[in-house]
Image (cartoon, rainbow, N blue to C red; front, side):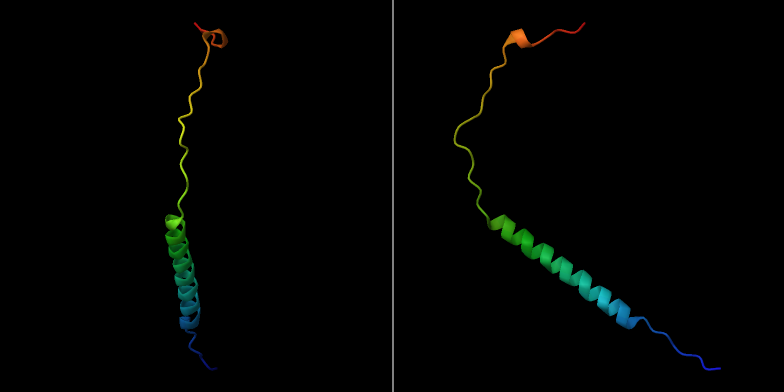
Length: 58
């Protein structure tokens, strides 16, 4: 009967490469999203609520 040594270095290496690739993609996407300039509204939004629509619950 022969015993073979099962090493999982190739599995670990493949998993490590996938995790690092995902991490790099997330970091690069975060950097690009941080550089996008979004225009802010110039005018303040104000809505007046009349007292007629409000009901007082006791």
